[in-house]
Image (cartoon, rainbow, N blue to C red; front, side, top):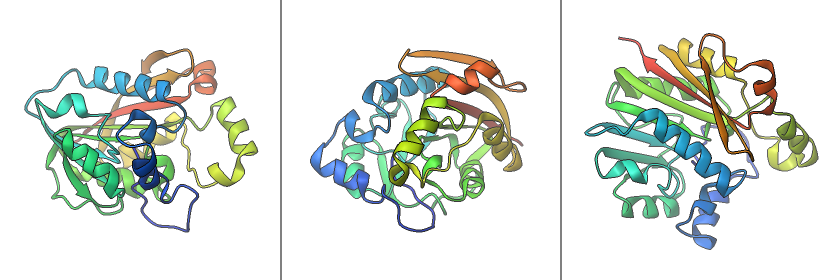
Length: 231
């Protein structure tokens, strides 16, 4: 949920999550972008999408303190990647195997994981296509890849980015169609799309071939795309 930058110049977010691990500690607050409530809504939507796997090999890229996947760690082998060593220490305590690494070159063999997650990470990555390609590479054939991100077309986010330019200028936000295209170009077929509406707390699934409708595409705060790696 936090720092896995690939390359590019300095960002106001550099060091943000390491600092959060020191000052806020092992809390959901340390992992959030918009709010703790939004963090929980997105987490519950993703966990619902996964449907309670057991015995799976799961990779969480940008795992932060591990609050997002802690519920999966007992019944599955969960590996968490992050650049914030302080957050990884908290993740380890939750039964998550910590790996200090960036998203530009994940230190895993091809086809290792049954499920690969990247929640609210891609917006910090300059090379989104390369990042998604790495996620897909590490998944086994038939494995599931779930990517979430702040919605590029959300009207309120557009205003926020204009007002707080320094903080959000480094964000690389995506609409649904582009996320789907990145997954498909990397060798995975997009299967499900979910729109999350904050602060309402609602979620809405849509046929992946069509994606969110016009109104949903402007109001959804977060997009969730699930894809399956081709054989």
